[in-house]
Structure formats: structure tokens, C-alpha cells
Image (cartoon, rainbow, N blue to C red):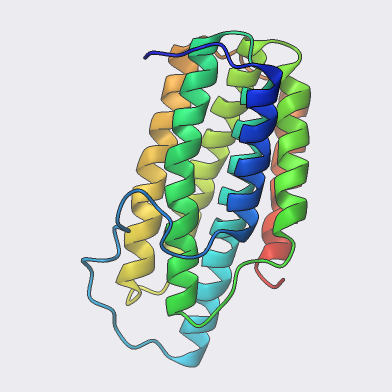
Length: 214
């Protein structure tokens, strides 16, 4: 993977661009078509639609946080190759973000109103952990992706069986999140201490419980 050393100004501009397009990007800005585009929609009752929208809002909030996390890590990465890997993953995560936003629109719902908070909190955590070194950054990425994969599997269990479009999005996201985590491990991620892993799960639970409704 080719990479180059970015100046502090380059990184600042990239961070601002990422924040703006993450929090304010309209539907349809993904580089790839949504995996749901080729799936026929079906009628959902009011309760099913509301539940599917709540779950997809949580997934959207998770992708907002993922953008913040990856950009936070990339902003302080010491190895240009690690930085490039994180930027590549962030680009794929942005597709996930757009897919979730598209599906929310189809369900007649909107993203979480707290998106700026999810982004800022994740960016701060990513940058703070990255200061410890690239292997710790990769450790946070690997653990985050493990937890996200478990979370998406849980959503597949919860989504209405009839909602094939939402399920197609979540399944594709889970496959790519798994690949991101595996790449982080292959690049030298350290295993995080168990108290840190528990804190990450607690933080994620607060976000998911809130984003479902707000």
C-alpha cells in the first residue's frame, strides 16, 4: 500500500473534511452502491418499521463513531502505512454510513440527532489511544471491530425477518468490519487490558441505548 507523510496541515484539513461529511453528508454519497439496492422491499407493519428504523439508527450512529475513531487514530499515527490502512478502512466505513442513512430514509426515519457527540467522543478516544503508539491504536481498532461484529450479529437476530433490505446492509457491514479487525491484528495490534475492553462495551451500550430513540 503506497502512502506518504502528511503535514500537520494536511491532517487538520482531512480531519475537518471527515467531520463535516460524516455529520452532514446527504444520502447517496457512498463510493459503492448499497447491498440493499438489488433487494426487493416488502411491506412492514408500523411496529416492525419502527423497530427496524431504531436498529438502523443505532448502526448509523456506530458508523459515525467509527469515522471519528479511525480519523482520530490516523491523525496521530506514526507509521505512514498504518495511517494509510486506517484511511482506507475509514473510506469503507463511510460507505456503511451512507448505506445506513439511505435505509433510514427508506424507512421514513432520520439519523441520531446526537451524531456530532458520537463523532467527537470517538475521535477523542482514537487520538488519545493513538498517542500511546500505533500498536495500541491497532489494538483499539481490533477490539472495536470485535464488539461491532457481535453487535451486528445481534441486530440480525432482532431485525424483522421480512426486512431483507436492512438485513443485506447489516450482513455486508459485518463482513467488512470483520476484515478491518483482522487487518489490524495482522498489522501488530496489542491485546487491550480487560478493564479497557469492559469500558468500551459500557460506552457502546450507552450509545446504542440512546441512539435507538434519539
